[in-house]
Length: 356
Ligand code: GGG
Image (cartoon, rainbow, N blue to C red; front, top):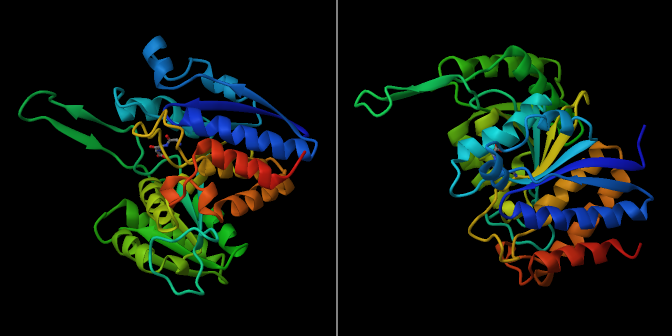
């Protein structure tokens, strides 16, 4: 049943996460109130500052505490004086894994008025979703560093691809394709990666056999990167491993403007655990504190969260307000060729939503 009172564990994290997440919660509060929904934002100060003060990115009972909420809303992770793998593996990745958020859904679409960065036919529109496997693949803890500091030092990093892991993410992607334009592209590298990628292809083929109406292609990741620049409007659903999906989604977001409008959902489609919603971008220390970060990726991620929690009508209204806001350079940030800032864009989205 859809609840009219939501509890959201809210982790701004680091850098511009502390600017875009408060902006997004203001928009969501406004839109939710218009529909009689109220949100308890449970603000958590976890991240790199917490690490420096306490020795870990989140408390030892952090996952238990998050499990009490309807969803997790995350800003950004990373600080220049903290090793990136320490910050990521101390907060973001443990949450994805503890809650088996095996789908990382990353929509990419062109907004009216926002110039695209690539040349496409005038009647074409870029509108795709990237379904990234989110719990295994190249993101694995298996391996190690050996002979540290010696001239025989080496590192081993094992990839982990399981039948269950590939099958479930591929099934999710085919279901997405079925509800969209019935085209699916699977990112592979089965010419160069001898074990895991042929296995990926084999299982994607098995799942494809259950969806005969979906036009399916397997494309080598290098060729796919080029196609995404040359013909991004031809893509509908892309399914990819953890690393490939991460790279492709940044590339695809750049074609429609910038990472500042790249939203994402870390989903447990079976709803056994809370799902987590976050802008794709990181903490952007180069612009933090300047008030110029684009809040749209966080706001859109918040809209995805409401949709996941059954409040599709509120989510749709937020998306319509984003459409209105992005249409004019006066209410866009500089990464999209605009003249506004975080505050200006946030108030513009709230005003596009109309009075309470
Ligand atoms: N929005 C959270 C964040 O900081 N993401 C940046 C990042 O490096 N993410 C890695 C990943 O998604 O695997």
